[in-house]
Length: 429
Image (spheres, rainbow, N blue to C red):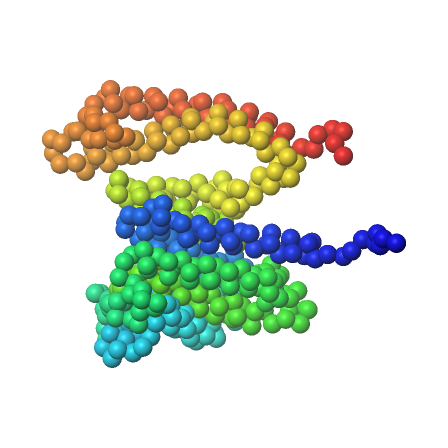
C-alpha cells in the first residue's frame, strides 16, 4: 500500500532564508563586479569614498534615526578613529610590526568606541536639545584640541603614513587602488550587515521605543539612559571603522575630518536619504557623494545646488529619498505601479528642462559677476555664448518659465494617476 500522507519539508524555511539572503548576495556581487565595469582610478577612488560615507552615515543613523539623538559633533569619532589608524600604520612602518592591513579599521573602531564610552557616560543622560548641545560643545572642543596637541593630531597639516608597509595578505600589498577598493568593499558589506543585525536585536528595538516614548520604556523597566548609551557607543565604533578606512584609503588625516563641517555633512546626508529607513543613509551617501564630486568638476556652485536639494527635500519630502520611494509601496502591492510610469515620463522632460534652466540662470549670473573684465564668453551645456547678451538671457528665462508652467499644468494629471494607482478597484476581492 502506498503512503500518500503529505511529507513535511523544509522548503518553506529554506526559501525564506534564501529570500532574506538574496539582497546581500546581490550587493556582494555588485561590489565584486563594479571595478570591472568602472576601471578608472578616479572612479574607483570615488567608489571608495562612497563606501566610507555609507558606513559613517549608517553609524550616524544609529543615533538619529534609531535612537532619536541629534548630534552635531559625530565627526570626532570618525576623525579620531582615522588618526589612531594612521598612527598604527606609522608604527608598522617604523618597527615592522606584523600587522595585516585588513585589520587596521578595527583599531579605528576601538578608538571610536573608547571615545564614545567617555563622552556617552555623561551626554546620554539626557536626550533632545540637551544632548544636541553637549555634542556640539564636545565636538568643537575636540576639534580645537586637534590643532593644539600637534604631536598626536598633527596640527593643520595632519598626520600621514604609508599603507604599503603593512603585512601582505595572500601576496596582495595594496599598491593599486583596485586592491584597496576590495578591502573597503569587504568592510562595507560586513559593517552594513552588522548594523542591520543590530536593528533586529532587542536593544535595537528598544532604541526605537526610547526614541518614541522614553517614559513608557522606563515604565516597562528599561533604562532609557543605558539604551541611549549602548546605541551611542556602537555608533562610535562604526564611525571609527569609517575613519580607519578613510585613513587606509587616503593615508592622511587632518583636523578638517573632525570639524563641525563634517558633522553637518553627515547630518545632511542622513536627512537627504531618509533617517526613518535603514537604506536611507545608503541612498543619501551615494547621492551626496555624486553631487559634490561630479558637480564639483563642472561648476563652482556645487555647494549651492546641494543646499538647494537639501532644502527642497526637507520642505516637500521630509521622509527623504527613501521615503519617496516607499510611498509607491501601496501601488506596488495593488499591482498598479505601471500606471504611474506614463505620467512620470510625461512630466520628466519639463521638470528636467526647468531644473537645467534654473541652474543656467545661476551659472550665467555667477559668470557675469565674477568673470574677468572683458570676458563675456562662457560655455554651458556644450554651448558657447555671450553671458552679457540680452538675447541669451531672454532665451534661458523664457524656456525656464515655459518648463515651469508646463510642469504646473501636469501636476493635476499626476495627482489623478496617483489616486488611481493607490485605490482598490471596485469589485476587486
